Image 1 (tube, rainbow, N blue to C red):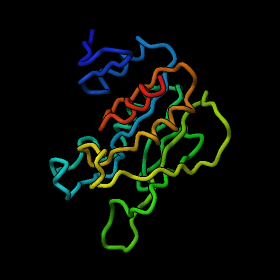
Image 2: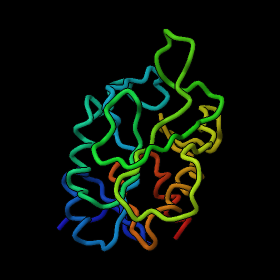
Image 3: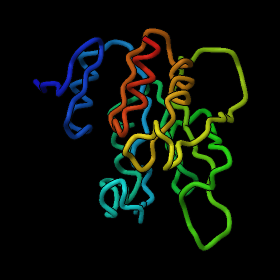
Image 4: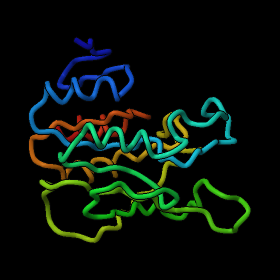
Length: 191
């Protein structure tokens, strides 16, 4: 049995390799939805040392980490962040675009345009809610924002609340790549 790192008030956190713990989690929950911002597979290296090492992100050399998680996940519903720089996951039924606003974001500095969006892949079925456009507009947290966590690519909590509000009702939200914890915060806010 795998012991949780934290387990209170409907929140359980495991500090382990997600490929090891995910099969265990899936046997202990009923209806579940994957909402995750895993390494994209683009070998990203930050030159901004405020957020720790300027070494490559572990597991970001290719999309195998994402694909291994999705293989374990099976045909359950999922919302998976990604980038146009890498192949989209098999089984995506819709593409959502997170429009980050006016910030040019991170990326290749040799061209005058910076990416102000990210892709979110909708996989599986069971999502609910009023039909709307697939472009979600939420301002990216800038380096100077007081509420920005100490993380190189945090997602805004309002964006994550919006995504989770369309997830299958009463499903347990699973995020095998906790990052700055915004998926957890949003899920807790929504009960």
